[in-house]
Length: 174
Image (cartoon, rainbow, N blue to C red):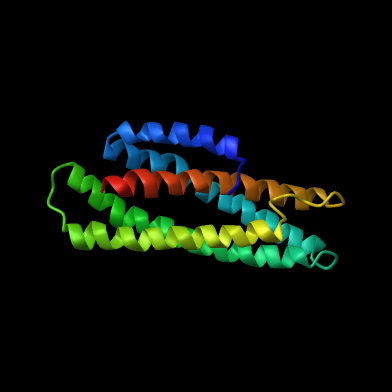
């Protein structure tokens, strides 16, 4: 989604190395790297989108639409991260430690919900990608507009890897 095919093949090979990691290490990696990156990336993205819309939206109305999509995307993703960290991940870690967990209620049901939310996040990100013409600012774009597109691209690349690790590696193991 956010990188070329060759780049994705390299990234996927790096991510697939996590198939051999313990569930505990994988969950901690997801939180320490990808959840942290997502929060930092969203803060940057929201600030850039708001600034671009404020200063240039009157001249480039597309920036207003991008700001609105970014706001929706970030709101949804923040809720998703919080829910994973407060429901699924604690249950997964508890189970890995040998504690009793209600598999249907604490793992299976949240997994299905989180996979749906991942698809929704990818859909919102696709809308932002479409609005930004593939995260590429037009040649005449301002520095703000270019910074916004670059921030979109960075967050998208991180999110693609994040979702792959969760859906294809962690969730598949559960």
